Length: 600
Image 1 (cartoon, helix red, strand yellow):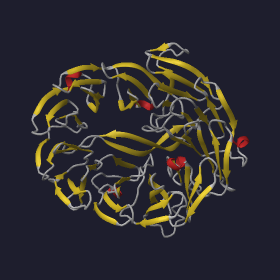
Image 2 (image 1 turned 120 degrees about the vertical axis):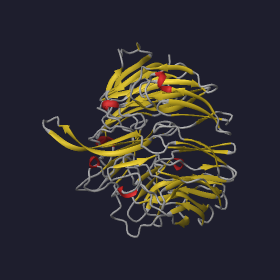
Image 3 (image 1 turned 45 degrees about the vertical axis):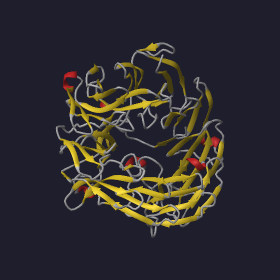
Image 4 (image 1 turned 90 degrees about the vertical axis):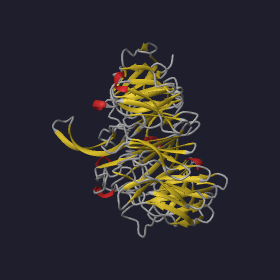
């Protein structure tokens, strides 16, 4: 598995994907080799540097990397130092203070990408081999990769370096410059090709291995926005070997990036001889010619701070509209009614785009986050949690005395008052088969059994089972009787549904809704992960970052780790990283790193 991790100069804390985590070793004693709760420490070690920027593992724990602005240390799987060094000594162009750092993990080691922005000179780029600590290549050819004169902590460019995109399938970087895009081999820095027919950053790409072609959609990156002349929305197909533009198409709408994470808000799929782009609806292109075949698009009502969602420059809502559902011959879309501010489902023929039916229109719906197909029924979740990303000005204490104001990013889940429910549609004609509106704003996602006959869904206080075909309610369980607080999420676990709640967990059998267990030991959980069959819960309250390992069979806590470190994976929060098989946790604090075994 190949992973990309990036670091940037952050003088703020993030509550969400990037947590202002706190390191406390394991919750309990933490001597090497001794148990703490049910977790055990495998080893404790130290980096040569303070690891204030990157502190991550390569996925299986073979390499553990810690970096600061000017140096890096790499440990092996037993905690011993493989190499350590200062960037200005390792790099021949004396790359030093690196505002941005990427680590791109490969099968054996990977690349540490360094970018040194110089105010009074030429910007410097260098790439170091993670396994050996040797410089692979450097360059001073690429400029304007970051917004000039704007520190990253000012909120201009949080997240990924928008002008550099790593193309995993080609083991190469695509670098956006003012007048062109350049493909550079990641291992050598050799320029493969350059094209001036494509401008902008790469918002999304698909690599076609059979033809050795790349289909890319562009966006105007922050760093180069002021430099572009004649920028246009482009979808292009490129010969990956030589950079030849095979076709160039324009598309409707502009590609936005999420406020904090900077993820491009669009998706691309190749299905047969067509390319499907999901951006405020669906746009479909012939993969051979780039000709637009059909579209079903809408005007988004989230923009400008005046719409139904009340987005603003400092606060935006995401995960509000369900992704398209594709079958062999059709696609189902949640659509916006621009004039009457309604939302509804459309079914289109996948090849021709012909509208096959439209469902009843629903007014006052803030979100429709999930759409499901089960046999001859379409299920729509109306309401439920939405993601909020925002920046807040906060007063911080200075280590030198006094206080200062800084912009702090937050990512969290929230609920909005609206009409909530489950709508079931007859797939043959789009007519409503049945609906239920007995849910409060905490309506959960829907879980469907393997046979596709039963749907399970709850809200803050109750948990229900429905026969999908008829809409008959099979059971109604008082979830508040479990005394674990209001429901926040549901987890599909074999013959059970586990309801993640404010104060713990409750599990119910799918066959009859009977409660299997209730656990009150965990509070404030806002996210769960399933990694290699291991389940983790995360608590970020009060600027903490606690990861719990859970046995979903009985609800018992295997152990927990609380972090106060920097670095870590953005997925799990600062100071914490987990191997891809879910068997080991790494906890970081400055120079210290601890390897923790999850299952004994």
